[in-house]
Length: 184
Image (cartoon, rainbow, N blue to C red; front, side):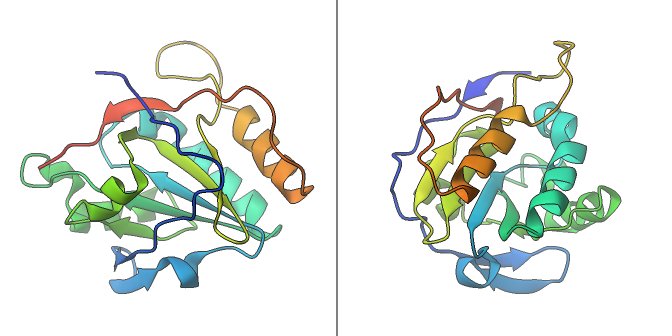
């Protein structure tokens, strides 16, 4: 499994708007209807990446925990499904349902959304404030498949709690690491 580091997004950048198919509801959803009152976490993921599989239960737990605090999550898959058919929309739906995703799982068929966000890996994690300005882009925690460190979400929890306290995040930011997005 190749390791690709996320490319850091400048703090304060406004989240690129999008409208994509939610593979679970089979409805088009846009960023304005998905965003949270206090924050929005945008996750670039896919079905087959071992790095994403490693953190799926943590993502579900975090989304459930922070929803009550005004933070919404959304997952987007931008992989080329012709060469990676395991990431096709009908399988995304099965994946989301079997993992009990409490957030939309959107399909970026054109890959334009991934390009607009400058996403490069799965998982690639972005946190935007209530005004949809970039607050953080980085890792969930130090856990990776096979490194023996448990998934706790300590980094992302600190980020979200700092944002909810309306303070600037000033700690060292480590980029997310995962499989590369499978470009067409």
